[in-house]
Amino acid sequence: MSSAPRFSRGDWARAIAVVVIWGLNFVVMKLGLHSLSPMLLGALRFSAASLPLLLFVRPPRGLPWRFTLGYGLAQGVGQFGLLFLGLRLGMTASMASVVMQVQVFFTLLAAPWLHERVRPAQWLGLAVAMAGLLMIATSHGDGPGQMTLIGFLLTAGASGMWAASNVIARRASQSYVYEPFPFIVWSGAVAIVPFFALAVWLDGADTVARELRSLELAAIAAVLYLALLATLLAYSLWTRLLQRHPAGEVAPFALMVPVVGLWAGVVLLGEQPSGLQWLGTAVVLLGLVVNQGRAPRGRWRRARAAE
Image 1 (cartoon, helix red, strand yellow):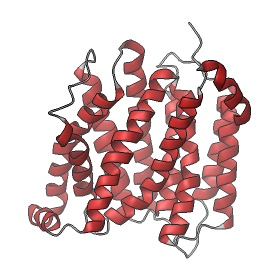
Image 2 (image 1 turned 180 degrees about the vertical axis):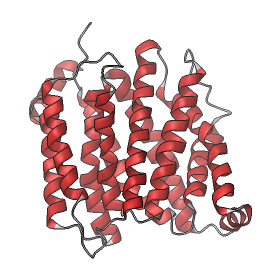
Image 3 (image 1 turned 135 degrees about the horizontal axis):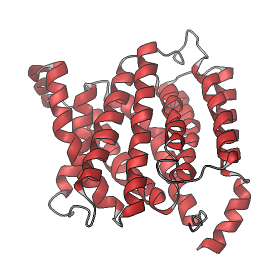
Image 4 (image 1 turned 45 degrees about the horizontal axis):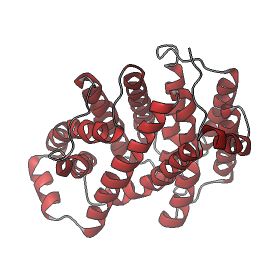
């Protein structure tokens, strides 16, 4: 089996762009949920990301529909349905950006099924990162850094669905050659009808109609950010990385998302993480460095040879 290519400078740029977009993502979700129910926000997100493009973007060629359907249900309905509901039921934006990173653990567990080798450094780095996540998650207080149990459980479930979508994308890339952008557009379309159905079932048709009639500018801006940047751009870049590299190499980059998420929660929403939460974030970053098996500067120098 040939070794996977090293991360090029372009791959690093893709990964950093995804980290920033997804780090700000949680604040945008909170703002959108001020006037929209969780399931309606999901329906509008994927409607804006997919419906305008279906006439112009062909379905991913050479890829069986089971991958598109599976990814759309896992990443769309599963991940964001649970995450939006968790944010509505007591999860703060800063803490959500951290708890979601449990997906790295679930993704690495699937490595044997993907026929990928997990290096000892990856397990060690994961253990360090998980210790940091535990420090953050168990730090409770009276301020906005506190989270409810149901919010935590729903967000943890969302991270598991994110890992499932990582595995689906990587499994597809092992057997088929396909373009990420059409894959994201058409898999997003899969989530639209289930989200609208859940919105009507959970909130009632009258509530859904009232929220649609009274859409505020902030809600529209949140939907556009989630659709164009967090969905189309970020997930296309993320899928491209999963095509080029093993899932266990790509997934740990998401451990940097809490750094942006915590900063955004503090600056934009006025959340106040505790000292233990900040320390846990530093430990998470250390886990990422250990997971990659070498210092980031060394990987950056080696990237020139990969281009």
